[in-house]
Image (cartoon, rainbow, N blue to C red):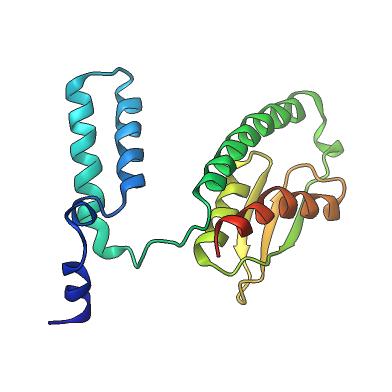
Length: 175
């Protein structure tokens, strides 16, 4: 038998049926939110989807990303959610009360120290989810991100904030 089959045989019953437990939980919660009402039937359907989708797609996942500190990962998710809300308010204020010619729209190059593809993806996604910034390209060597900023009077300050606020935290979460 092949190495992958032997590795699959070593998994526990729970690991076989819940290959990605956090994804299962997320799918259940998202299903309940999409229904916009809680019901036992909705919960059961969410559980079925939460079990079936990760199980069916598990062969397409190369391996679980290594995470050093789940607590810090949850704190980071809370921080990002907070930043999304605050940035939405800031961008709304910019759009409503500032003329276009007063905006400091610019492209900045964010040098990154992260090496894990998962960590770089989370960083790029975080930057994009935060209104007012969009990560647009990863350099061929994987050492910098090209980021578009809606209003960044000081490019160096924008880079410093992204590195301190997001990259430094991700370096503590991913190896």
